Image (cartoon, rainbow, N blue to C red; front, side, top):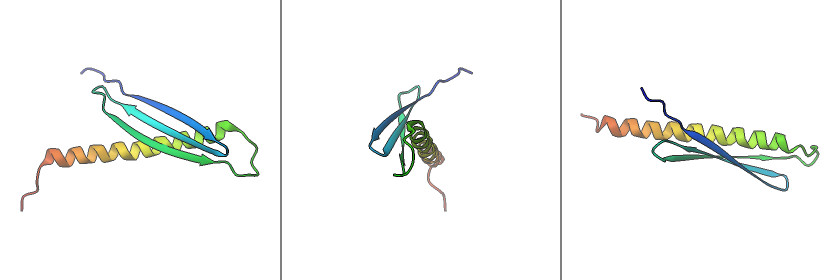
Length: 85
């Protein structure tokens, strides 16, 4: 069996106390699925960017996993065809 490589790229942006992450999965046939996540620093917190990056990225990956599961579920339904009564 030939191994397949899928890649996930995570893009992180900051705007003041808000951090946003976008996780993009690309498959061998160039299909893509995108997940998004955010984090917000509380006003009293010390500014440690890594924490916001980690939280936003983990939330983007979680969203990506849910979306990928939905794609797989849709494919299963499509392959199964209509239900017979």
